[in-house]
Image 1 (spheres, helix red, strand yellow):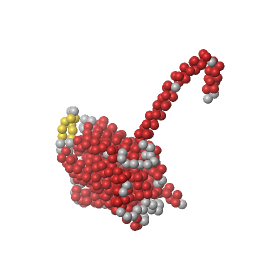
Image 2 (cartoon, rainbow, N blue to C red):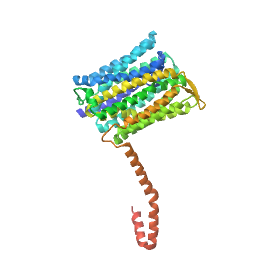
Image 3 (cartoon, one colour):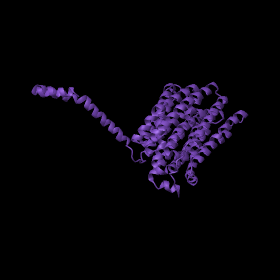
Image 4 (cartoon, rainbow, N blue to C red):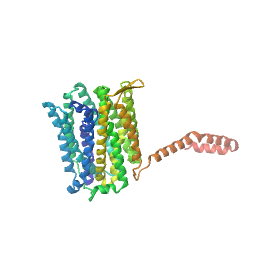
Length: 461
């Protein structure tokens, strides 16, 4: 019976994730940027909001203690997700009655982020107990694939709505559809089986974390990576809308391409992660994402029609790897204490991501009005930030490489083995026939009967 419940829960999790992925479109990318701009948010406050989204994860460090007392995660997760999503209809009411101002918008969205963050750690622990270790990469690869397909469809729908109604009216429809899908997601989550709690911990949680140097390495990597990401993340879409003046149709097509690439690569990354390790997949993703940010230094009105498509392909490949492996890596390292490890990992990410967004917001506030020429291209000051952000991203590999993950093949070993296999294949297919041919010719001269016998034997194979 338990096995049946687990299989059903995993199926429901995939359906639930599809609804949640539509709601998540509202709080990321150019859709969130458009919503924020309609409520009067500027560059500094946009960075602040994106930072709050991560800073709210600090509350996750308190979740393991609460869960241990309750000995259940499902009611806890349902309550905080429901409250988090219930704030969004208030934005509809605000826009209808004319309360369109940045103070109320920031307050409502921040509260939504904070309540949602409480649920994240408990949900992670829940899933950790449902999924076997050797299936984790494949399951989340499939789940992310379906989520990406759904996101692709609704991103196109939202972009068309905003293209046809590029004001507060279009934003209202986007929020309404996103909220309906959020309710759909909550319904299927409420029907999902919760296994008995395994990853219980007691005592001083912080002391437990710092007692293992590998845990500390994980926290340091997460802190540095999220600082680098949030330093620039809020301003890619801002640059597209405000400086490059791109249409929402074009943004929608780019997002669809991005999602399509994720669809094509996410299952591959999941299977590869199960084979060579989630850390190695994350290293590849981080490297590609760093190259994308550096490329944005050259994103100008003269180059955007080419580089934007390159960005969609590279970024889709990179983030499908990152989204999979940066979530599963703490679960693998944490083992039975995965919920606790993930909570502190998210907390460190949140604090340093918030710092990155604040510093990025301050820099963007001053740099966005600065323009200059570079190789006959019209440049904006934000592009300097993108270059700096890319260099910071690639530097995070130094900290990632220090994390130790047992039971996985090192990336250099995999690549080295591939080179050896290629060399062997080349030697067999290209070079071995030459001495074999010479040997047979000489054999025909000195021992013709033996040569004929060898030919007959091969003809039978």
